[in-house]
Image 1: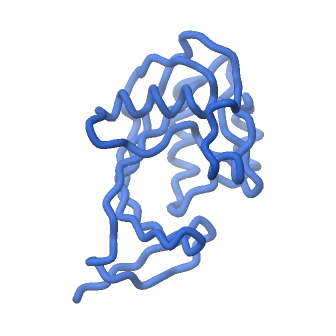
Image 2: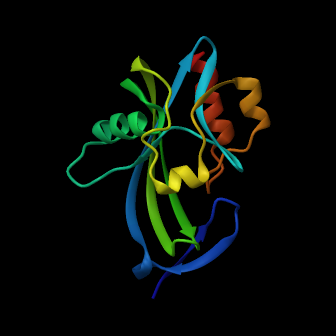
Image 3: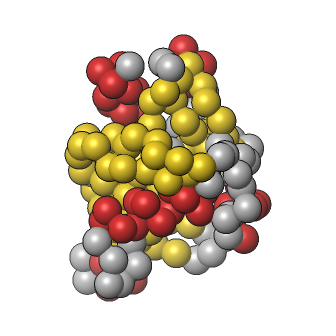
Length: 160
């Protein structure tokens, strides 16, 4: 049986049999306003609002739903920024995923920042969304199992 290499958000490597992988699609939004970027701070870094596609949803519907749940803000999707592959392992929840990660720029339409829509995992790992400068993000860790920080912040530079 074929094995692949997966990593957790700290870069620890695992060998996973392909038959033990789940397939997931994640969509994230990058919002820029007044030269600041909206992020979800966590105990070990930051992430962009977004999450997992549910069956029957388009990637656009997923991003609108997840963005609203995680930030309290309604958005309009602007443009596709990038699509990436990730092999992820989460020991705590015993999850091994082959993931497709989709990043889009978004425009805020309405709402106020809130964490009222956080699910149990988000309440444990994330904090209320905040606006940060590009310089501040360069100093923070992107909480993700693949190293996309420089590429994603490069997109942000073009959006500012």
